[in-house]
Image: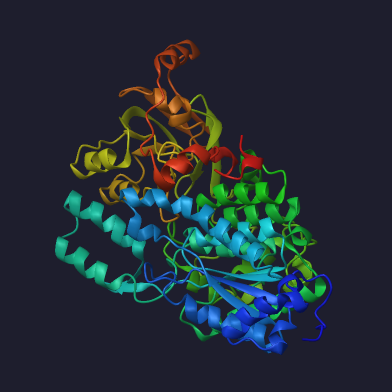
Length: 569
């Protein structure tokens, strides 16, 4: 076989060229690849399609469109799979402990396949929540020319004449327990909330991370918005495949795109749209993978100077498709950029700066956008962004709150301490929760769980029971992007590592002050030290298998809960 014209810098030459690679080529030919394919750049299309969640059930079709884009641009597309976990289906069960772990498994598996098969570039497809950071982390680790491709969000359902999402169903469970909703109504809500394929429709974790991918520069502007089952979603996918060939030609890699400025842009967009607290964890992890200095306190600093200008679920009523219909994430980016709140010179995957990329788009003028959920920076929904980082003697390394209500919130009340989510859920559902309570759920952190379970079931039950503003919850675990109310997660250090949250007792007075960004327990340092001397680390919940491994390997939530040994605390 003659030598190909494949560029010298492509590592796929290691498996496609030379007499000694005849066995390797034979394997490719068995799969239908021909001489033209073998002389082209090899583009891996990482696809987590699965029938375990509507977020991913359609991703084979999305990946096929991306494959067409690669193929039509004279590339050699190679599709391979990886796992996914449905956050919504595992929510409220022990299975939710697998969710954050799946982020690491996705990143590891994509890194391994692209490394082992000597691929030249990646199109990383993502649907459910942890797919998105997992795929982005894989691109960062490999530093291969990469394009990130979101699978799109589900359309809202309709119940009783109003649009609804999965958030409403979770809150309906609490309403039934409280007696304010009948089981028949909940049944009808359940049957209409999720009408088809796509990720959960509000500005929950998947849509937050998709929006952030645009701000980071890892996905083309406007790619986050089209719904999963819309024709435009497949146009975005095909364009992503074409773009993968362009980034190979330019040898444009994540290390050429990502910078401190691009991460600051991502945080600004997160806080302006009321994005999920999970993005704090994921951006910290991605920054560590990229070797970029980013601290949890940076989120608060940026949020303080960035107004909240989008009022979407869970705090508001609108969903991702509503934002898409008025121009999508680029409209938010334009408003922030015009206000001097973004770095317009940050690079994007297209090779143009963020500011230059905006100029390529045909967006409606601002004065043409007249909707009740999108605000200007001069007259915002809130003067500050939604993400608040609290510190104090309960959270020496920080804790995370997404404000969906009163920014001046101050709460002081007795701790109701639970060692796991199940016990707390039973307490709420049995009607024991009282106004003023501070529900404490501990030993649910990265190592203590392990896996930092999201606890939308508990928070939704609290809200559904009518306690959105007068009962707080704190945990070393996480919350879903659909959580609303004074719910504080990511408390660090976690209980399993000896953090103060593990020293609390029933009845201790906890004070939450959002304006002061403080989270404290009314105990002296001496009392905390005394309790610390008596504290013993709990036995791990698992002694074998994958969960035991991650109990050992996870780092602190304050640094993204990474497992890469180079970045552990």
